[in-house]
Length: 315
Image (tube, rainbow, N blue to C red; front, top):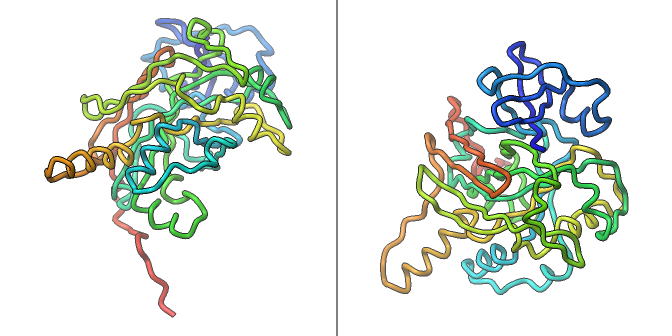
């Protein structure tokens, strides 16, 4: 089943079920649906042309992003002249990002500073379907309501500034996280499922296309930490809520921060010059994952011209 959130022509936010050329209206929000299910039989349906799609979970109670793909972590560290960190293989980690800055397909409005090394991140996200605390990984897959594509937009210049202070990413990450186009329930992904002793993996091809040119290729099965293991970590001492979003972290080759580093090293070996690639205003970034669809966003610069980069306090 493919679940969506959308705006009706009356600007009401509803959840729905995507049925080929129709959307079955569930006259409640996605959060209400995930918490309580349906209380009455759906009576209306819409053509996709009659509604505006939103992120499948437009208002998650929280949004976490994990660090599950070793290839990405290893390459990104190598490109910065750093050895792989041993702790990556000891426990899954995550950070909280801004759950009020969730967007769906379409335009993504960014500020001036966000366009300083603006990056995409090709990820999968799971959405929690029921409350749970101290969930063991052997039971954790049962808490997943579905999966969706996630683009963790990242302003790398802001991120590099703030991470010098060792508190992790904040302003470089909290302006836009795209989810969509729909939330796919686990039963639809059964043909791709790989059972492991630590939870389910899925053989889903992942790719990113920038202005029509493919720049990234990976697979969800390469997650070194399963979502079950990540959920176990996230739920330790904390009750997860229906609608909570948990990202996988970037797949290998799934962002320009990693790709630019790799391309720069290769150019250096050949004695060639190298110019890094970033997202610009007017660019389109499209993420596609087998079974989960295609998420397309266009970057739009805000009319504001205010900057916070490298602001210094005068004492």
